Length: 465
Image 1 (cartoon, rainbow, N blue to C red):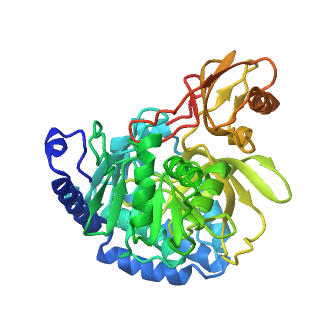
Image 2: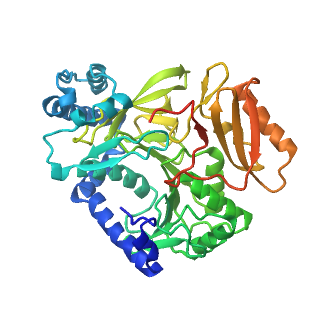
Image 3: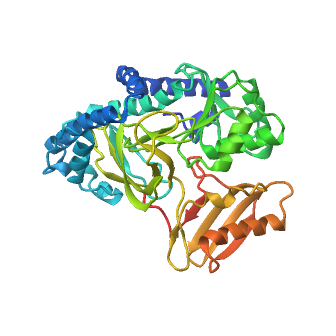
């Protein structure tokens, strides 16, 4: 894990020594992630990615049955679980096997954590962590080195399919506190020399400082970029305002994760960096992975997980509802039919890109709460309010009572009363006329302690953590 800039010793170090600290931490992280198991699985899964759907389901069936048997034999929480239903049709075998497994809610997991840990796994092989807790209290987590390796196999399968290699130089915009908070001048980034990585601070992105970020992006010889959508959007806006779009071909791709990628963010990032944006949906629980293709759809990494949809809405083209996920890689805490708390839209037809298997149009809910209307409705997926609001650079909805919301906006130059009225009309289309709306024009919207951005923060419509 990276040195934290809140550490007094780190803060007092010269920049070059901080770079060496980041390099050492990067080396340690590489050892944990890129094991022999990682390279073995990555090679296998790069081959299986092109298999037809039925062959992918055969792999799912085999991995699910192994995990069910392990859970029944070794995990106290799952004692008494029924044996897998072995049918020749892998789809039916998976469906019938999962039908006998009770859904695991987050509250159940939290209260039963000790009994979900597999005691057959040696303590020396268990890695413990927590979820970020940005939408509620954090969950305790435990996983194996293999679970880490297999998640990164899904990450690197996607990246390599876009011409990126593990040793390529790259830029990252994540939540690590790698620059002391009271730093007043550039550089607002540090180097991990071992991984050829430039880590940019997301906690120093003022309009004045962002000019230095843009300069450094143009100086770098990196091949690709990874970061939080909200942070990359700030950088992209600065690049576009300065008229300094990155030359086409400099970056092969920009990869995003950890937050919901909003349409206006994608547009700005792709224009500024002159490269395609590829999103990934994953969770701290090592229970699900979806990776985006150039068609803009999210493909379930079927070797890694199984995704069910609790259907709330259905048409001829799609089905939409809450996601129940089953991770196939973590022997320490098996997540069987885990209600993750997010909502997704699964397409019923194959993806035009040609990749087989389950494919989703979108996944919502990773960083946003719901807005509660005066008549008690929970309304999510509100980014569309701002989709066509070109004079609003950033926006955040706050709510403490069902009777009202506060809307913070960062305006673009030229923002007018007409723009505010247009935004309010869009809000009313989704939340009705009874709710009171207060608009606050601000210069910036604070990030969470981990550097992430939440578009909706509600004390009464908070998504379960």
